[in-house]
Image (cartoon, rainbow, N blue to C red; front, side, top):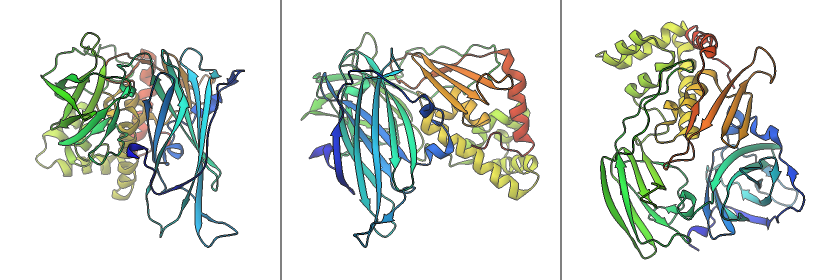
Length: 423
């Protein structure tokens, strides 16, 4: 069975959709809740693997923690039932669905055990193009829908999704980030190369600048700190990830295309120590406060004092801390690229402003709108997708002086002990 093995659940219906003769309109509202708290309460992970030139495979890993279990009329057991639906759109025509696929899963409750529902489904994806895959998970008992939007590059056999990443137990790995000393195994049915070079880069990237800043961020220079080679053995490449930074397995020495493994602290995406707490609070701290916290002999006391002072009480400070660092954690889950998600442009806006009311996807990026569209009091942030060899998740904010007033309003709300847009 290999990585096709299905555990913990029973499939009751599987079917693959076929190419539509008549293009269908995508439900554009499905992206509106993309980054909201309610949408992300479903702990779901996905990865795409290109099996051949016409078929691709979506692997999924979904926690049952928030699923609703109900008793059926004919059984003494409680069951959850979910439907996973895929809508495929070409990057050049996001308003048309080129293929669909779906699967229905049922899971029997076993003493309230939290477990993962894992498996995969195949769908049609012709080679030579970029796509967006809209994934909807419908909890049929709860009557709630969760959505995600995945980018898929099938323009060449060198792209990341031509490689399936597993662990020593042959379990598919879904994340782009890993723990120090982790070992991964890489295989491909389309790319038949036997020898690859791996470039290692130490972590040395700064956090995002304010949205009104005119200062230019330094451009990334492709200068690895070290390079080594790896070989395929028995159909797989074994790659050790010994230290923080990122490892880039090059599939093309000229274009630098390849598969990248980002290695962060063992607790990532969570914030688990005092120094990380201080660093992630920089967006709402004055420089002097920030420096004093970092240089304090009692960093824990210093960051606690900061939150208690802006919260007005220890109880209120706890709530602010919980909400603020939850946004940091969600930013790490959603926006990790070659740096931690909270340090990115989207992470910065997400932490300070919260999840946008509307997300509009487009070929070269996405637009976040806070407030009602076309309302003069609303504000929109435009993020441009950056093409680089390391990740498909790198977006740069189009900065403007016009953001200064709204930025300071949002920061001031936090400093007054109020959570900006608690969604």
